[in-house]
Length: 496
Image (cartoon, rainbow, N blue to C red; front, side, top):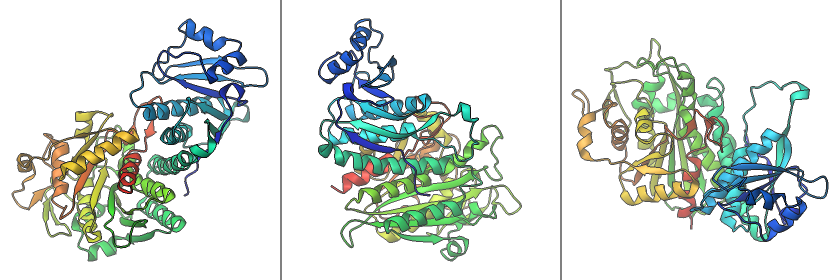
């Protein structure tokens, strides 16, 4: 279960002297030949200067130009990748590095060298994270192609730097974050019949065993004793045992309040009795990306050895129609005593998170961030670019948005005004689990807020950002790794 990564190292070799099968040179808009590039241009017989002079390559974002290479004594292939007009160099380097690795995979070069000029430690980290993201593939259920059609898999990458010793911290932190992303993306990409609640719990146990984290796993019997009627009503239609999993990382001072990270783990969501349309339902294996994000973040945080206490909690089950499934109109009671009218059984993620958030209170958290592929309404509002961010503490909301920006996972704040609460007012219970189409993302968050008691809290709706149905240039179709980066950046800032 340990995430598999390519071997990423540092090299002090100048780009002109690199002997890699593929050298990728990341350049800003309107690049010029000078410094280390002069030596590379000489190695290439002036091809770089001629290409720039003819405007064959202008350095636009994601633009690429393959220059070929040299027979011996230098890079066998040279690929230019554009970074565009740079406003955030860290983000531009991460993006260019991901494109570099994806091309290396496509070419079958086996190794790649990446150069983007002089790099400070956070830029080295960005290059490492980008290379690992671009190299990531999920092939566990694919048969090998015929031998004569196979390409050499990408197994090694090197970031070219001026000072290896100074760049070591960036390499270490980049590899740690890359491991978290890889774990989260693998879990999300796995078919629902393999990535079950039991498997998520076993993955958490593996993380705990490797890093010395305390783990607690509650099943149906234990949750029944805890009176988690909201969580359990979702699980009552499936024979699979639901799991509430807690991982405790104690890197901070003894007794210091922890940061709590909470994730929705619906390993498959059919919608239950309020069943979804058949078209596209296979994508509902991604409904556990919040839980995958928590597990990936805990992997990265433990590798980073951050001096802060962190508790990761996930609620995992499947939502299935059956003779025992919860029905629209049913009323259930959550562990905090509140009664919930079930309007739509496809609004199940908030029912799971309700009891997980109530359970989180016992850890006396200093801040709680939950992540969930919660509402299609968020995709309508923000598309696939930004995560919806809501919470009960404006300063915490801003802190989380800033963390997401540093991680390349942008978020946008939506209001949690009391006026919207009327939409989830029930005639027969304390609250209902769906307020209809209007303001669907906001009412879902307001429902969750009913189970937040005494701690600052932020909700991330990652329905549009946790996975993609189209190629993103830097990433293929499938899971993006969001919100691992946001979680890690938030915790890392708290650890300073």
